[in-house]
Length: 326
Image (cartoon, rainbow, N blue to C red; front, side):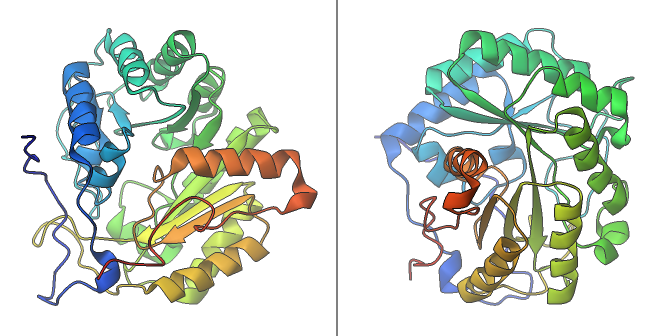
């Protein structure tokens, strides 16, 4: 019998209220889950699924999907929404690109998302190591499309260009939240700097795809969200994800201010589509890497054939958030 591990799940009841029905998840298929867990464990590469206490871990691992987090599991920044621990990181492991590429092959991934902790301690903030990981996967798994999700590199053009030179298929950098909330919740980040990252990526590779994500439920207004959507489009962002913030711990992270309903997500998605994003995914459990393969495939189709419909929605990427389990 396969035993599910004790996972570092999010504490999402900051006020003691029962969770809304749409925030409940079914149990995973155990065989595929166990295979993914074994591959991840053997690789020695961290996953954001575990370190960030993602609520989609069981579902994604049951599909043999995992989002790998390179450059260690200690971040040099302290964001008040994030479960990844802040500490002095170890030097980058020289063999990590090879171990990562081997794990991607063992999982048979058609599309992989690689993210990383912020490495402000390194001269290039980890850009060279990130590029090595992309190239290792490209060599070992040439059919796999690669999505990168790095920190902002302080919007340094030389760092962003170094990663772009490795030719990822999609460059993802999260705006995370509306501008007003950024200084207090993401004090070492910067809203305008994150927008500049996306502009720089487009300047370096005008035909490449860019993506960004926002959390809701932190105290933002609808008007602020729509303004953030518009800022992302102005920066050339092609794909947008919008998901519910879930508080990782009760005492060390900012509390949830609101649980958005599936209908509210549908309304936000419609607004985003009207702004011209090539792809939009919005829903309670949506995260940057959730159903990323399907989102990428649909986005690339829309990029190639813009007259056939420029955006996707969650009905197209197989998300069950609109038909929640009771």
